[in-house]
Amino acid sequence: MDGGITDNLPQHFSGVTITVSPFSGQCDICPKDGSSNDAHIDFMNTSVQVTLQNLYRASKALFPPQQDTLFKMSVNGYRDTLTFLRAHCKCFK
Figure 1 (cartoon, rainbow, N blue to C red):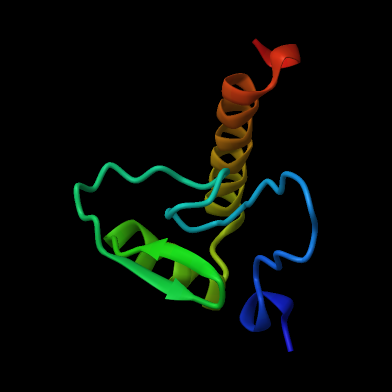
Figure 2: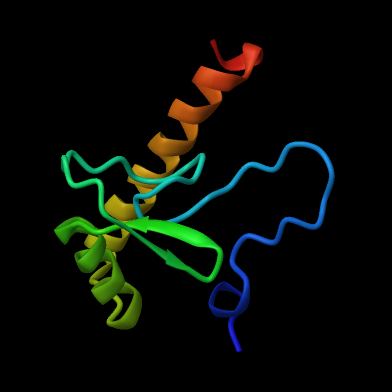
């Protein structure tokens, strides 16, 4: 069983935990969809925003995309991480 299905974001540690998700929602590092929809689904300790973009991402998790699409998704994740680091870490400003 995949750990993301059982408990995606365990909270068993004291201190700061940076949360990461491939779906837009309330994690620290995740895609930011331009939707004004505030509806969220809590799924296995992760809050996921209800958007068409997340539905697309879920379909690509079940049916892997072509290499060029996968590369673009990876670059987007890299950019999301840089955005977070620039906002929260002094060494990236």
